[in-house]
Image (tube, rainbow, N blue to C red; front, side, top):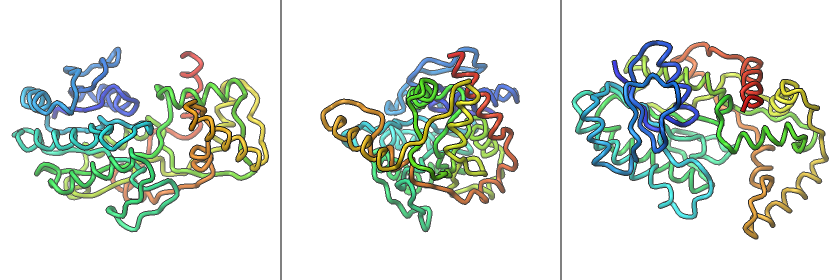
Length: 319
């Protein structure tokens, strides 16, 4: 078995690659970025999935059995849907390459929880309610995959939630920097619970989807997250403890709203201020997904909350 992974240099891709290495499973990476140092991938291609011809050449040459599709534009700064071309045209290119391949037997297509706004509970796999251009682009990802029947092979759509852990991107590192510098604060007294994903656990879930039987996953949609919701306050306090700094103070919710309003004004003025009403709503909104279907496929996860917090803090302090 050989696995081809698009977006292999990202956070999830890095963790999946390490897991495949541990199991001595040959894999090929494809990403706009350079390969991760120390990777045991058979090959790494610095390529763009929006280049359909190049994508087909790579797949025809490598002949993978399984494709794990992670490559996407994931930020929220796009101005039009066309800015998220990787999530639309790129997916069309991949499907065309899958159809032209004689080796591929399964594709795991990655969508996002943000096909629905935070806090919205969909009634079905096609009940969408995005409130960002990124979310809308991932709706198109899913529509393209379903409309093309995944390229005519065994396929599954997965929706990761927020992913945390070692090797996090700059956005999440910024949050850790605020915690360490004691600039982070808790908004109000409530404890908010969310279905978050520790990086090592979500990589394990992808791995299990690679190994699952066709009948258990074909043409289905799964949320990916830790089975036990994470308490945001416990998460931040745990990171503070592990980094050896005082836990964040709690400010009245009304003060947090005033700060967020100031952030909105700065953002409108062109200043990127990290705290605004969009972020505050995300903090205050609980989202807990029913992951029983995912758990039935993947079974127990390898890391618990305390292990994840400790590993994340240690990695951040080294960074």
